[in-house]
Length: 242
Ligand SMILES: C[S@@+](CC[C@H](N)C(=O)[O-])C[C@H]1O[C@@H](n2cnc3c(N)ncnc32)[C@H](O)[C@@H]1O
Image 1: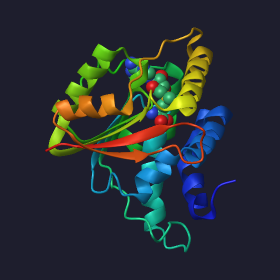
Image 2 (image 1 turned 120 degrees about the horizontal axis):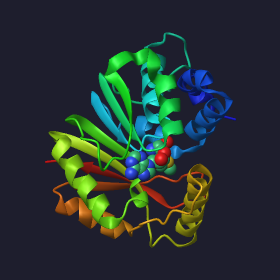
Image 3 (image 1 turned 60 degrees about the vertical axis):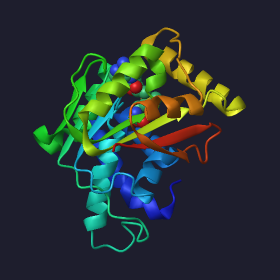
């Protein structure tokens, strides 16, 4: 069940995944409804006025579908399509997602195909693909799949790709987060096992270590707990350039 205030938004955001198959559609509805990050990004206006977006480890492109649907719902004249207390969603003119898993990248492309060239999903490793200049970068639950030096290099390149007032939204687990953290680690490793066929090690850090890493790159950071309604201890780091 979805909250009534986001029922239309959820229908709109998941609609394109019907073309990508039953799994893609069901997963989109489940994740967009249950993961507090999607709702939180809109409710808190975290990407407000950001026109170009880079989504690293974009999975099946849910963030792009969600932001497009938000724009459509906000423009709708039907009462109840858009929560009246929420700020205006961003009006994206450019989106690039990078995704390693070919099946995820394909689902993202199918769902976003109506957007044409300005919304693209590139299949490959975020290590290897150049980042275009953008207003905002979003990385949700991805960097712990990379060894620490690779995380540092990706974040350094993110900083270089961002405009002077640019923004990074980075969701991470807190390695000092106790049982919630351990549970999310088990979940992530199990999902990776099903998707890739082998156990993947994870390279985690405490929240304090993530903040230090971002601070050393010149970001000003705000932490927002972002695991409401889940048993995990995830945090969204809002990292502002300048
Ligand atoms: C937990 S999922 C999150 C997906 C998406 N960010 C979301 O919130 O819906 C992590 C994603 O990161 C991708 N990923 C992991 N390592 C990657 C890499 N080196 N380059 C590109 N994508 C990667 C995985 O294939 C997976 O789709």
